[in-house]
Length: 402
Ligand SMILES: [Zn+2]
Ligand SMILES: [Zn+2]
Image 1 (cartoon, rainbow, N blue to C red):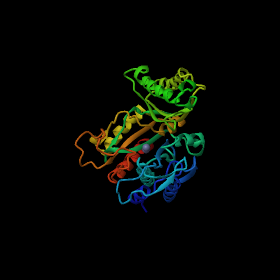
Image 2: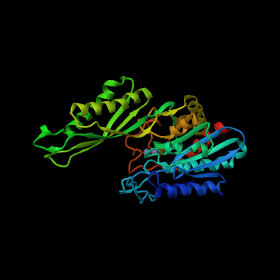
Image 3: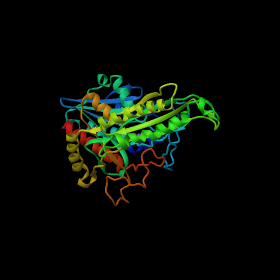
Image 4: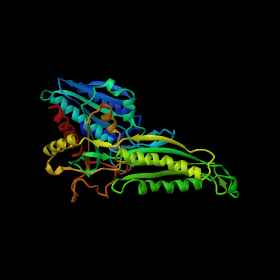
């Protein structure tokens, strides 16, 4: 009996689920892991599932796939496009789509497990296949660790994973060191004093306060970190007021900060709070701002030695010219949390997912004409994406399992 990866993929793609709601996906995973004879640990941080194969003495290798979809209405026109809907944390009915390709990750990991089971006589050690909930919202990896993940599954000696993206199918790209940015999210309420729009002298205008804060925040990257460093401060949402002649009592901001090392992160995170407090003081606000530090992922740091080792492995399996280096990306991931909690090295690579035919340029530079992850048009080709994803996972695992 063998898994029909094509059927598994199209089924998962047609039935995506929002973060923390991956019940059907988790059940599909449990069913196939059961068929493959793995020891199963389910209910990890809700919907997470791990399959364990104890195969004698040797290292423990953790292969990770994330399972969640996104609140995006699919416009790919694929036969197996999603028509699913879900309810978001605000109680709003939203369309759901595998717009980040996590269905590729789940399917490829099932395929890799199947191949490692079939070749178990050739290797020795412990394989852990971890299917993680909620990569896209509120930190599924942190939740797993907080709930004592490594008391329920063996602690890994190395953590490996992949992400499909807009590069040529049949290739992988991997970057040693800081590969993806840290992200810190802030939910902010700036307090003023409301009143009539004609009498600003008896109010504290939070709209003006918020406007100064937004402009001043852009000085953090421009003036407080070195030119050779990089970071991002984005105020992605600003809300205040209802009407032209009413000065409101508060303004709300949503801020996202990205950085590639702890020193820059500290400067930006501390700076955001300082600017918000100082601008409130400058406006004579009646109260200090409320600043809630929300979602926070560390830098995704690929262990340099392990990364170069696997780069060689990938070249051997996929071909010399099918392994690229994307450099560091400003996107963020929580897979590093799983490695840090185990004190294990991480190697996380990008898997090409788009048809290679029109590719004339380098294999590790994004084609601006292709839909990016999170786009309503994100539609990886099934092959050779899946078989490359399976081969990369198996080869990387076998490098450690012998
Ligand atoms: Zn995503
Ligand atoms: Zn993703």
